[in-house]
Length: 409
Image (cartoon, rainbow, N blue to C red; front, side, top):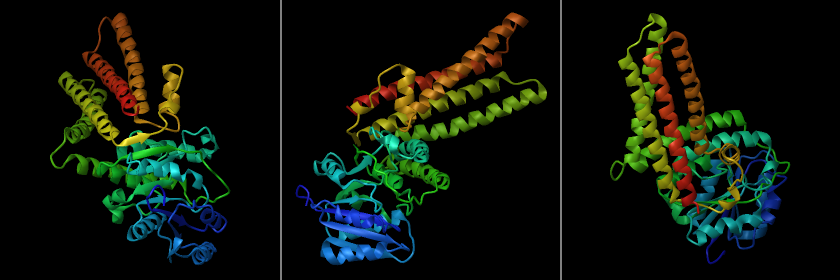
């Protein structure tokens, strides 16, 4: 037991004959149950784990899948078994030796202390994060951004890290039948946790890489997981903000999803009309600008309040470590656009790009005024719209950043 809590550890394993023995042997003594789930291995992983199960008795349990079902399905099988045996907290530790067992107490403490329902490792803030293979860094950055938006935990880092721990109560709240069976299971679980208003703790720990073989094909994995996160986002906002009554956040999101595409389509029609006929309706231009301004404002409101509402359910131990000295651009690049790709970085980038475009278009308008003595009212309207939308993104990014720091103090 760990601080009077029964602890189980699920070890999903696929062809890990070189590592599985060491993972079991180095398991902390306070762990009550170890569930090794052999996901259809074709090497001796199962036989090695079976030997430890016979040697350790009831402490080590071997569960076997005849065919490969996926790491998510393996973990769910371990979760179900741990609940049936009365574990208070269940951790997940990979069978390839990447997860340091000495770090397990740091994952358990936030749950035992009542500060979190689910804790996960974060390798990206560690000084040793550069040890991570570059292809993983690139894939992690994009998926981190998508997962933040989809799950609602806007300050979760390293969502692909499977070193986690969960309380029994949180585990019982999950719909285990719907957990993604493949490598996207950890992202899927975060979405479910947010829907249930549960608190997640981000725990900094150093990365650990050996000679293990990865079964993840990053291109295919990123595409498949992006679609999973897209669907998960809509499931989350509808289930979380529709009952017991419709929340304004849902209305803001829906409004933006209607107005922005409508404005873009109408803008395309105006542009085609201008190219084909040489004319355009100033009323249509104004309507396009109004749709895009209101749509982006609704999106900013929705994202901001969604992040603030979820901020109550996010705990981190790395706020001070992520503070970056230097100017605005240095802080933007290192804190929000690096490996921890944050929606704030996206907001700032959009704002900067729109301001630059607005300045260029404004100079073109002034030049045309000087040379020809006139200007197009439609072009002026377009320029004003670009500047206003850019100002909206900048304003909400600054507000978002200020409130984020307050929540994470």
